[in-house]
Amino acid sequence: MALKRVIPTATAAIFLLVLTITLPMGNHVRAAPFVAIVVYDHGLAKGIVYGRHAILVNKTYSFTEDDQAAYAYFTAEVSSANVTWLWYEPNGQLFQNQTTQITCDSSPCTFVYHFPLRNTDAATNFGVWTLTLEVSGSDLYSDHFSITPIINQDNSWRFDIIQSAPARVHGYLTVTIHPHNETWSSYLINMPFAANVTAYDPATNRTLKVSFTNYTFPWPLTGRTIVDLGAPRPDGYTFMIRFDLAYGLREGLGGWNSGYFAFGWQESSLGTFEDGYHPVPGSFEITLPQGASFVDAVGINDIALNQNVTAGVRPTLSIVNTLPPTQRFGWVIIYRDATNPNTNPQPVSNPVGRRLSVAQIQPIPLLPMTVGNFSVWSAVMSVLLLTGSELLSPAYARKGVLINRRRLRIAAVVLVVLFLAGSAYQVIAISQSVPVVGR
Image (cartoon, rainbow, N blue to C red):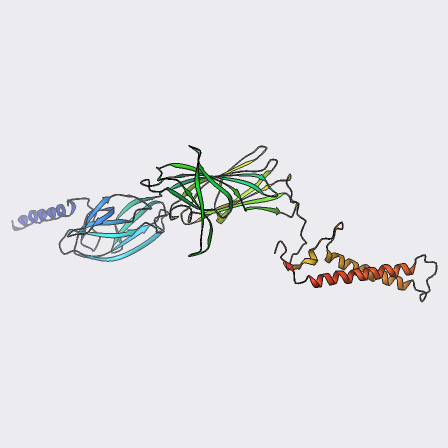
């Protein structure tokens, strides 16, 4: 009879213990093995207010790159434990982890982890992140949250290559800005490649003031162009910058007069707008000269190009891409323009890359040779003529040869004089060396 009374009492005690563990207030998470811990609530927030108790502000699972931090928290009943916070990037790679010893004198307690975002590498790693909390090597729970970009501007570039050699290229940049709270009244961009820069509002055809400034600290930087928008502009304000390309079109691919040209472009989010930590969606449209043909296009730093080529009398290449934050983006297109060959003289081949004197590369009018080539030619010819004149001398028993030995020797002497003159000219100009293309 005593045994029968003990069994119901023990069963009731176990049942009450199970209810105590499995029916707490809040979101229940199972207790980790070997550790007495029961989690009531967990998640992330954008802010926190510290007082007698920590108060989480703006609880969310969605963050932007401009948020100062993400605060991960959990509320639990626990005496003491070592917990590990693990933060995983969108690609599944572990970004960082930290182990902390927690104690709670009066359960339940709330514990918070501060994860910085703004102006960090994590802030520009867009996508869905995973936060996992471990206790004694076992996962206690996982939270998923997203980091999304802030778009401050959209760029649309257009290049009109009128002529390849000499280069004549007109550029047009259409900018759409997205200012916050209508506080931005000017636009800054680095354009050292541009000349004759102007700006205007296409909606009203109003000319915008353009100024230029150069910086020398912390590093030299030229071509900083500032467009005065006149007043703080609302979200989505669009304006255009017009300019002529000062450089960037390279000629002479595959040898001079080959007709192959390369047009390269690079830009960085740093120095374009605000602090450069925001991505910039952009599009590029390059119109080739009449009669030219597109050959190839490659992205700089192995960037894959989303490109499209439209055929026609003037082929057009379109590229759409997003400039990553704090990084460089660029491309090079190659095309053939046989209607505008380079008219510069072909340089002397110099495969070893040494420096040649002015005399060695100085062309001679009406003759297909330089002063250096002429000196060598005159030396060789004078040796041949002098040798021939000596062989025709009476000292050699040669009969029946109808050559005027005297005139032959005079021609040889003249060539010797020309050789000496050419050599003297090279000695005088030997210090005036110039680099050869291809060095």
